[in-house]
Length: 152
Image (tube, rainbow, N blue to C red; front, side, top):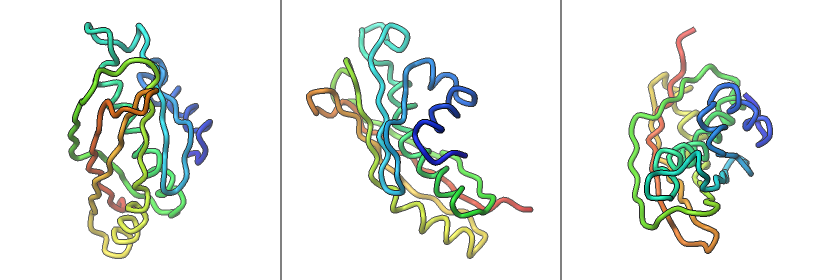
């Protein structure tokens, strides 16, 4: 799996087509932070003329999942990842360009280290916050990621 934004966006074209076609794009990623944007358009709207909740969820999940994928790749181990749980809060109508940011990448390395050392699955909760162009929070998503070393 790729480690920079353009390669992850290309990955989404082939492996996550709903992400690609709805306009969700990774803009920045490092070990601790990821930023994803999506613009409200006809193809990703709900009947209330705002960004469909599921599109917001895809954008938010990408901020967390891209960092998990990158750190798994860097570990050199065969580790599975899966969202086991999630929750969300919607605080304002999402119109215009929405930017989702997760700054909890620091949680991933410890979980990967523990699953490698113990062979037991690990879970981490990661938060992604979506803001509109005025900087107002429109939604907050939390994802529970499970990580486990795959049997060889």
